[in-house]
Length: 160
Image 1 (spheres, helix red, strand yellow):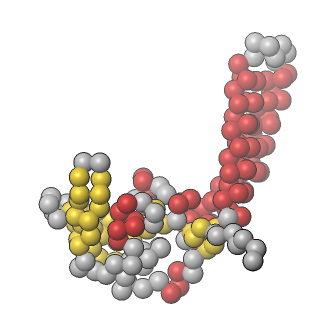
Image 2 (cartoon, rainbow, N blue to C red):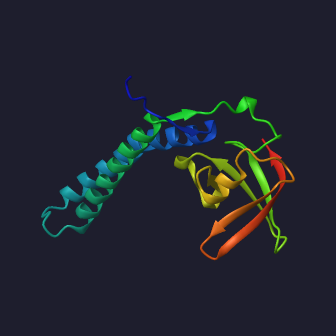
């Protein structure tokens, strides 16, 4: 039996964002960097040309990110969120949690590994909190092991 490649799951929103970033980097970002390299070359001596060195470094960084994005997009499976329910937490769910000790509330979206973004309050399904809340229902209290000890969260709300 041949080994099957296990694809990581991703939300449609996350897939679209990665696809848009890839498109942006392949078109306008590449052109912008190429122009900066040409402008720097026109200044003459490249041995002491910091603008040229910076543009080349940015070009290498951009190409590396393009390769990363292409690899990510080939290795993911987009989750059909049209079947997403508010009965239990699943990939794509927006979840409000309450720390049972402090009563502080946090709202996160549960996403695939490649779309984690703490600024947008997106947490991985494979993170300690993500694993604890996956497939759980509203009202359930879960325990999360952290370096500073066990934290208990109550699932307050599940949204699409």
